[in-house]
Structures are given as structure tokens and as C-alpha cells.
Length: 95
Image 1 (cartoon, rainbow, N blue to C red):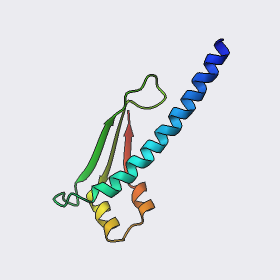
Image 2 (image 1 turned 45 degrees about the horizontal axis):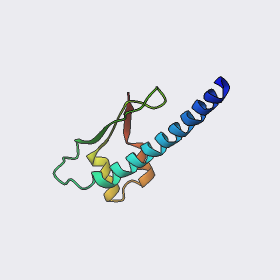
Image 3 (image 1 turned 90 degrees about the vertical axis):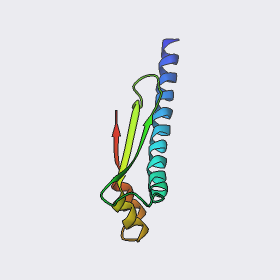
Image 4 (image 1 turned 90 degrees about the horizontal axis):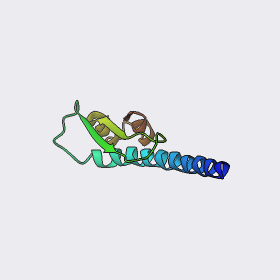
């Protein structure tokens, strides 16, 4: 019985980590898409999304902050940066 529960926990943990990775990828993409909307943000300021995640255990972090400088979003809009280059400039802090 213990081996079955252990295998189920390992499988659940693996699925949770995969879902978390997809979530972070989507979050970063949405930050690029929606972050260009506010026009009053100065180029030297940052746009940040902060999310609290309720989870049981330590498989995924409890909190995630992602931020990008407005000037990067402006460069993306002017096609000075590619989407993948802009994605790399997003800072993600997990805790």
C-alpha cells in the first residue's frame, strides 16, 4: 500500500511541476501582451504581476512575482526585439 501511495504522490508531483511550468510560460506571455496596454507608465519603470499560489507541499513556490521594464515592451512594440528576446528579459522571482 505504501509503494502505491508513493508512486501516486510522485506522479501527482510530476503533473503539478509540469502544470506550474506551463503556468509560468503563459504568465510571461500574458505580461508581454497586456503590459503594452498602459500608456502612462514611464520607460524606466517596471510592470509587475504578483501571484500567490495555494499549494500543499513544496512542489511549487507559494508566491511568484514577474516583472519587465516598460522600455522592453516599447522595444517589442517597435519590433526592435523579438517575442523570444523579450521573454528572456522578464524577471521571475519565486518564493
